[in-house]
Amino acid sequence: MSAVPVAPDDIAHVIQIALAPAFLLTALATLLNVFSTRLGRVADKVDAAAAGLRDADARETVRLTRQMSYLRRRSFVLDAAVVLASTGAAMTGIAVLTLYVGALRDAATASILFACFGIALVCTVAAVCAFLVEILMAGRGIRDEVDRQQEQAGDPGSSRRG
Image (tube, rainbow, N blue to C red; front, side, top):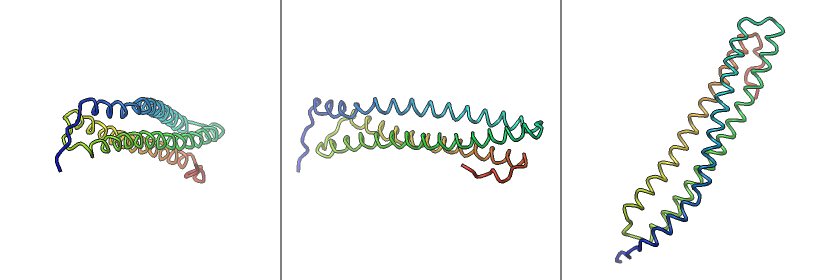
């Protein structure tokens, strides 16, 4: 079976079709940036509440403990948002990669352009997955800090509530 030459127009058409989801990936990346920023703000508020607990009277301790429980729930919701957006981005990348591989299947002599584009897609999916792992680790750190501070404040029953 001999290789069928691939016309540059055919390669350009596949890349055009594959680039259409780039707009969705850009939107998802923007959302992930927003989620990351909000998680950072939650972490800052946890730090401030933890610092306030050290010198708080009984009434203030109750208020700060409630605030930390609320922040813990917010970090869970942000984790869910990050997982959903990251999954959407990864699936978009995989869909584009599937389209790309499907076009390659019939073309034994793919150009260097095709190879570079394919590598870019794989790297994009891997980067989204790495970001997902990191943001989940950050959210876990926030919840661990909330639990630790609540236990120190004398409210051990509040730990591990979502």
